[in-house]
Structures are given as C-alpha cells and as structure tokens.
Image (tube, rainbow, N blue to C red):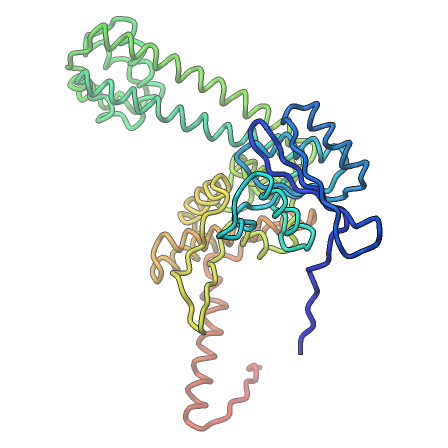
Length: 420
C-alpha cells in the first residue's frame, strides 16, 4: 500500500480573478467568523485601471488574503499580476484549460470567478511558470528580436519578388542578394544605373568570377516605378538592421549582471551560439524547474501518455509548448546534427530508425537536459561524450546482453569476469 500526499487542503484565505480588458471580477472566500464549516464569499467588479487595481489589492490585503489566482487571458492578466505581485501576494497564473467550467451550468464572469476560487481553495490546480521581472524583460527583448528578424526576412523576400517582376535575375546568380556585392548593385539600380556591364562590375571577391552571368541577369525592364519601390524596401531593411542591432546591444547589457557566465557555458554545447543561449535563458530562467524531466515536460519535448482500458492511445506526440523555446531548440538541434559530436551521432542514429523530425525533437530534448544541468549548477561544465560513444559503450553493452540472452536460451548460466 502506498501513501500519497493529500493535495486537497483548503487554502483559508484565497481570491480569484476573472480578467477582461476593461473589468476584473474578483471572488474572495474566507473562513466563517462564527467558526462554522461554511465559507464567507464576496464578489466585486473593478476597473482594470491602475488606481482600481491598487484599491483591489488593498481590500484583499485588509482581509488577509494570501493567494490570488487568475487565468491566463491574452495579455490582460499582466497588469493585475504585476501589481498584486509587487504588493506581496502569492499570485498564481493558471491555464484556462485546467479550470474549465462544468458543462450544463450557466457561464458568466461572476460564476467563472466563483468557480475558479472554489477550485483554487482546494488546491486542485497548479500555477504556470512565470519568470521573475528581470527574466521577463529579457524575454520581451529576445522575442522582439525574433519578430524583427522575421519582418526583415519578409521585406527581403519582397525585394526579390520586385526584381523578378522587373526581369532582373540577380538571385539566380548570387546566393545572397543582400551581400556586399548584391547590395552595391541594388543601390546602383536605385540611383539610376541601368547598364548591365556597369552593374556587373560592382561585383566583389568571388562574385567577380560570375561577371558574365551578372550581365545577363541585369538584362531586364527595371523602371523608375521599380526603383521607387526598391528604395523604400531597402530603407526599411536598413531600419530593421539598426533596430536589431540596438535590441541585441540591450540584451547583452541586460543579461551581463546575472547570466554572462551561464551564456558562456551554454555556448559550448554543439548547435548553441550566444544568440540562442540568450533566447533559452529568457524563456526558462536560471532555472526554477526541480529536474530536467520537469523542464522537458513543461517545454513539451516529452511524448504525452494517454492510456485507457490498459491500452495506449494517441500517437505519442509531445504537444505544443513554448514556441519561442521550441524555435531556439530546433535551430540548435539542426546545427548539432551537422557536427561530429555525440549529439550529431545521436541525431543520425535516430534519423535512420525514426525519421528526421523525431530525431530533431529527441536531440532538442537532449540539449534541454544539458542546459538544465548547466544552469542548475554553476560549477558544471559541458563535456562532449564524443562521436564513438555509442560504439564504445552502448554497442558493447548491447552485444553482451544479446550473447547472455542467447546462452540462457540454450540452458546455460553465464558469469562474467573481466579478462586479465
């Protein structure tokens, strides 16, 4: 017989918020002053303006409320969460999927707040991970950098489409039309240069071997209309480049006081560079997760378990987690897969049996496990197990097990002894 902890302990003084854009409905539940088993309940509706939220915090503090629970509703949860957190409350942000209202009952903001409060006071929900303020600021910057890079890529694609419309085939000859040579040619087109020979002569270094192909590529119908649009697009790309550089400078300044050494340790992992290390730390913190398995489960890099009537159901998919973390780990896994390291060999072994996509997820899980150990222990360092790890260790152990199993099947008992 196994003893398990009882999680249904009643939180004596608790409040729950149903959050909207303009209003917050707060349900508060306290013990009865008469000592009976019944609970005292009160519901209030306040504005989401700062003054009203501060007044709500004062009211809850005066009643001795210790825990405030709220659903993650778009970005509307952030003002109440930050204000109540600063006021000293234990604030829980919970997944709305875990506290869905029971079917067949009316649904209003008031009833939702009451239901959430009743569920919270019995300890039937768990809080979501919300990083501390310093990590939240870093996360805002790293996510904004991702958005800026995406916008820059979209603008570069517009430039290529514009050149195709003008029958300028520069992208056929140059692998990167925004390199040194390509950018010089684009600027010349905007300035009014239309001579294919003169444009081709702007090639630099290795591009000069393709001058004849460049001359053919510039035989198009590039007009003043195309020049006007191209000038706007190039200006936009330059602005985005400047914004990305400014954000990266801010990230480095923000992360230096508390995680510069951690970034250096993460940079040693194959596939992870400084930029990816910044993104990972911004998403998981330094870290609050008790084990590497907890972190992998939260990040949805662990196959889900669904079992009914003794049968496993579903396809074992991991589900959808933090997309910014998944992006960083995916890029790191792709980079590690190309290396002659343990992670690279792990990818190739799994890709042969399970396919490339599952292999990348598995390598991403391995990288996340390494990250947890490096962030949890400041004295930990990364050591690559090497390309031959499976051959030297796993392969040998597997062969030993197979031989023993075969001899046992023939009726022999095997005792292993290391040769002198």
